[in-house]
Length: 389
Image (cartoon, rainbow, N blue to C red; front, side):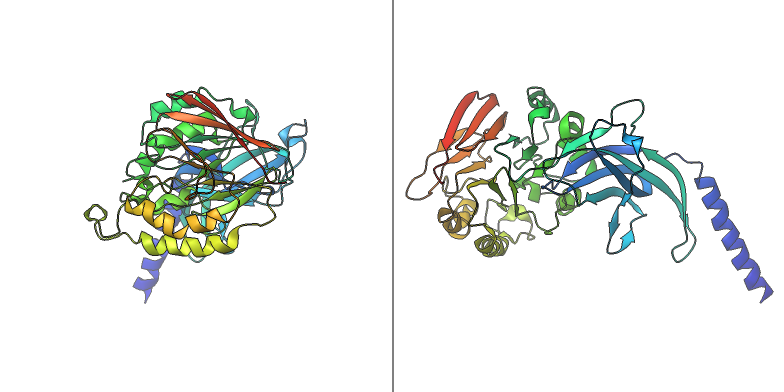
């Protein structure tokens, strides 16, 4: 009995000694922060650390005062009633914000140095973004009642990080409400490193810490050993890649195209099930659209009714009939790597604008028109009228 007590005592002492040694280890923010899932009253803040940590965000109105003119409550990375303390990918949802309002924010991560038993965790050093030697990070919530909304679209980057950086240099992100990543940002995602190095780090460097990402899944986002983890980096309260939101009296519809070939194709290795997925998406779409919306813009990576590939044909069977009777003003797509403009016709009752793989789009949705400027390889100016009252 004495021997058992001695072993347990040594084990506990060993655990305490390890935790004490761990307290001297530094913790670093390795990627981020980036913003996503913004609406009129909330936004999600994401970042990555090199060690598991307890994480939180402080936020304050950008009213001309210093960030620390007042104390701010902590908004923790929490899920199902528990603050997450063993993760290196951190997500904090900020709720209860005011529409069309500018805010300052700061992220914090306190290293989790050890865990004795039950919920007795040991926390060490804290790392954060700066609000002293440099300006705090800022964002502005969307405004459903505004007269206009501005956004930029990138698509089909396929891991060409430098090309994305070059396109970003041509954008004044201070004049953007959000940035749409409209699919196929990599050809395949085999690891977290590929996700960051292929495009997400460039987004953070150029805009994503202050202008939110609107992530639209393309067919290539479904490929690779890490594809099932992509949702973790762009979570949404719905739990889905497809959803709707409103800004400037406009309903934005984010759709998920699935894959472009039959589920049985050898390229998918027996793990694809996108026909049933699109059928479920269509059932959701038939109930999701707001009949009172004055304007409606749809993001869908694969433009329907432009080819005879299986993915396109199935989109025509599932999503297109619903969209055709829903007064869509414009659909913005990618996928083909070629610029195209398809005007409304008997098959598709709304215009489809397809961006190529080396250009970006600046879009301004106003009261009566949608104006698009394409820059990069293509350089065009387009205008689409909004006829509804």
